[in-house]
Length: 238
Image (cartoon, rainbow, N blue to C red; front, side, top):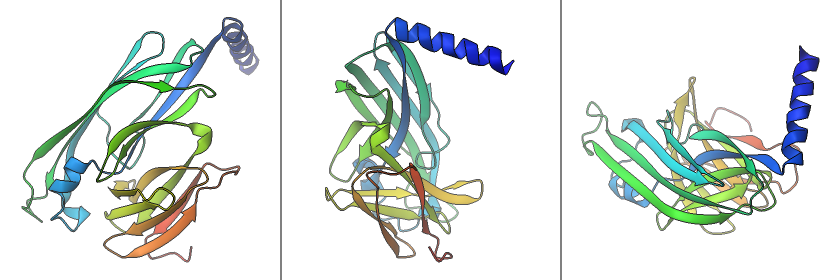
């Protein structure tokens, strides 16, 4: 069976190669909270009182034909919004549009500061250069000043897995660009974490806001790994 499957995979690869076809793969992540959300959370000091009731992700990727995405991800920072494979002919550009809708509030048992609120962030159709790669991190890049979508070649990306002792707001400061991102960790199988897609060659400072624990790390330009853990739990000697 293994030989048969391997032969089929080889034949498919040869066929796609011979017809100029390939598969593009896209991994979606959110980097930072949108400015609209940050304004509403400015009086909330603890992430433990924040309740995310729903996340809706809609997008259209057009390489040859429109590829539509409509998902309800479980997490905003604790994992990818989705991974998508699109077989098509080799392209230099793609068109992309999307809408990210987040519904949230504060837990009325802990904090009544924020009633149920829904924020929608819309990215109109735009063309992106995808020459030189077929795997990309698609990053919703949010700071207090701006919001944009970035198509980062996967080979140029590096993922930091930020861990905290409990659900907590964290800040990530891009030392090179001066951009500051505010996120929060989420409970993933009893580990509080958030994933931050960094750009190789840059330096970042990570800070757990409630505990005040801080670490600075470089995203290695050359490395045989593509992820590492940032331990801000205060319980490790890392």
